[in-house]
Length: 373
Image (cartoon, rainbow, N blue to C red; front, top):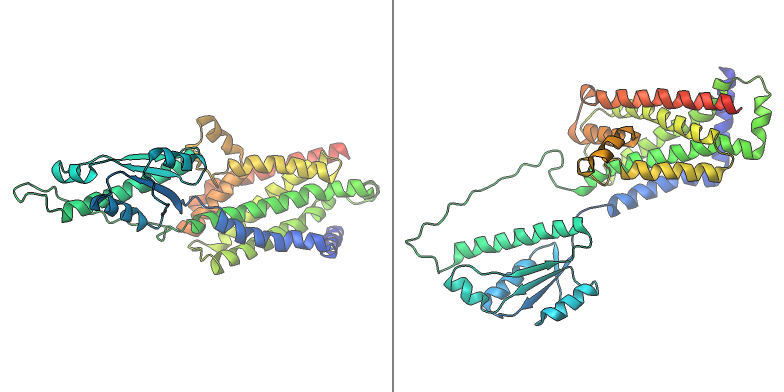
């Protein structure tokens, strides 16, 4: 026990002696959480929309004003030629072209219906889909206003009854995307930092030549491993604490569940990540190699964790592959506990899976360490 405490004390001193390490551990994660949480959003705003008004009537101007009144659209200078508008889209200066035909006002008054053409830049398919929804909603609102105010409706005609929908948004009633993203980004930062530090830790001893000296001492393998990894386990919990404070104070993320449950799950999760870092360190000879391999896996874990892309939207083979992704279970867990207030029984499946992964990965890491040393 004294040997383990001595190694832990030595590791803490080495960490706090290195100023660049302190910046990496404390300052950078805070900046990343503040920046990424504000930048990483799928909300589509400031959509550049161009109108080709061939009618120049009161109704066409009302339609344009309906889009101007929306907070999602930024109406650009109108054009009187569709060719000019298409050129603007090719230059990237507009995202949507609305072509209002000649006799738009006349058709609306005479036939009580009219057609317009909407062209959307769909290079980014996801963004184009959202833009299409916004355009449809704006047009539906415009149509409702016409039906309510139009003097062309005959009193003898039956007007369809409107159905009023009053939505109730659970868990994120303000529809603030940061509420959804901040917990996931916090998971990402805790994972990246502990994985990178642990993967470079032992390999650093190889570069300095001190690992050979340690191997000839009476220090046992488990004492060395625990002593080397425990400081990063503790630092991971510190980073989680700082992140939770920022999430609550800066972003006002609701924390409906038990915080102790979050720390308990994170403690097990960090064992998994530290074991994975140790396994990488055992099979590399330089810190550069360790960093490259760790980053290789992190990119895959991040993109297939459900943090940015819903897992349900992935192909079937990709959905099955995510079952091996530890970040997936942590992201699901922290969102369930913080935003939904889920209890222990609700997240037990995630905890058991992560515990199983932790036992397996750490077993492989210890086995490979003994084999190579």
